Amino acid sequence: MDRNLSRDGTSGGRRGVEAAELSDAMVRLYKELFGRGPTKAHSAYATPDIVICTLEESLTSAERKLVELGEHQALRDTRMLFQHASGDEFVQAVEAITGRVVRAFVSGIDTHHDVSSEVFYLEPLASAMATPT
Image (cartoon, rainbow, N blue to C red; front, top):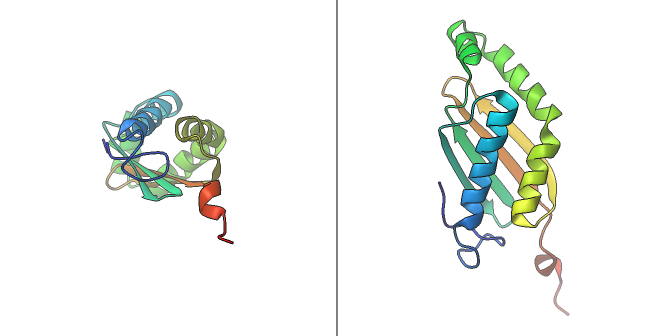
């Protein structure tokens, strides 16, 4: 898991703690919501206001069967439906860990490689929005 993350996207502050907390939260939510937690998780700030959580090997036995049958679109549709239905839980976890407001949440899955991404767009920090006088 990424261990070089802080609230403002720099390497200072709570270095590593948030990354581990975010990855753990995503694994826990996947396990609770989909029935199986990913075996690999990585979280990092892409920018000071964008958090990306990458999760691998999270498909259930039934979902792997859909892949074997070539039903990738059906699997993506099902995952997106579940993700949409439980989006508030993902957002609440990220807000609690980062102390920031999530303004947008985007979820995706590559069913061919069993890799998912959860992307959180955070409201800009007040200090970043302040304009010099």
